[in-house]
Image (tube, rainbow, N blue to C red; front, side, top):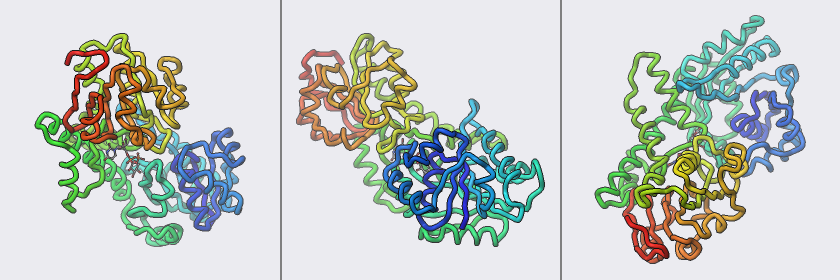
Amino acid sequence: MNISVIGAGYVGLVTGACLAEIGHHVICLDVNKEKVEMLKSGKSPIYEPGIDDLLQKTTQSGHLSFTTDYPVACEKAEVIIIAVGTPSRPDGSADLSALQDVAEKIGFHARHDGPIIVTKSTVPVGTNRKIRSWLNTHQTGKFRIASNPEFLREGSAIHDTFNGDRIVIGAEEEETAKRLEEMVAPFGVPILHTSIESAEMIKYSSNAFLATKISFINEIANLCEKLGANVEDVAKGMGMDQRIGSSFLQAGIGYGGSCFPKDTNALVQMAGEMEHDFELLESVIHVNAKQQVKLVQMAKKRFKDLKGKRAGLLGLSFKPNTDDIREAASMEMINLLLDEGVQVTVYDPVAQENVKSILGSRVIYADHCFEAIEDQEMLFIATEWEEFKVLRLKTISKLMENPILFDGRNCFSVEEAEGAAIDYYSIGRPAVIHSVLKTPHSE
Ligand code: UDX
């Protein structure tokens, strides 16, 4: 099948490369010339495990190509997939201007004998109907529209494409749905057919539910700290109930990334437009905002005054195996620490450059994680990179001036902390205080 993907961002690129891998002829279009040149030269503009090999394989076999030119992308395409960003406006609603622009351009350049226009971008319920009218801005074509939301996780997006739990196809006509089913069938993932509106809603509801699970377990963790329970045992016990399930019950310093924060806000906004007060989701968002800065609040309680102190911070990306720092807890923490007058040294295996472009010289960048730990008066862990989890608390303790660790991702066990000369604060578990600090601090 001849397929075009508009938008070679994270979703568009992974989708295009995976469709090419199962034998389709795919053209990815992006308006960013530099990005397209980079892709043509075989380099990926995003960090994603396996993407470089997949791009190389599919471009060399002639199944995947890149362009900035709409006529080239639209000429032969039987299916055109829209995968452009729908960022949040200040009020939380989704900004659809890029989507409208793309739809109008497709309408102008696409074949007029019924190509299927598929929306992969996460869009408010009802947007696909608008897309139909945008497609017809310049001339009236016989477009068929469909919604095919993506459920890929950054860091395992290629694996998820081939091993997902479901593919949702929302379409008006049975024939359109059938054609799209044929397109994705080789992935071997269960397919659900729905109306366009239901498909759009499935994406928001799924992300909102997962965000709710995270905020729920984080609130339980906060309570565990006060009541002396251990949230990891609690989550294990809850997760053994199949009606609850064990995934997304990892307590920590909250969710970040390009999806959960944006989609939960957009759903609250959408509900508001329908005069529906989505109180539950508003609480989920509020709990997450508090959770992201929880470690700094703990440090403030511990030190009373943070001014002039030195802190190391390990992990900048919103989760491991990605360089994405959008809505990352680390950024909230750094800003707060800087406001408090703390000198912050950061380390991340891949996300450092992205932080540099935002914070510049306001923080110190370490080349190795030991450099961010050495001689610090306190240490924070914001992302559970494997590289940090294999460190031993005894090693961290020896490196620091004051061995005090605030672990936002529960990378170490309480037992290990009990056996190391380090004061260890984690999430939803008892704090381990030894009071054997090299320089004593009052509680
Ligand atoms: C998410 C959805 O999982 C995916 O289906 C959707 O298409 C895009 O949004 P992603 O943003 O890549 O994917 O990350 P995910 O792995 O879901 O994690 C999101 C955030 O939740 C991360 O900050 C992570 O640290 C946090 N999280 C996740 C927890 O705090 N606890 C958990 O138990 C799980």
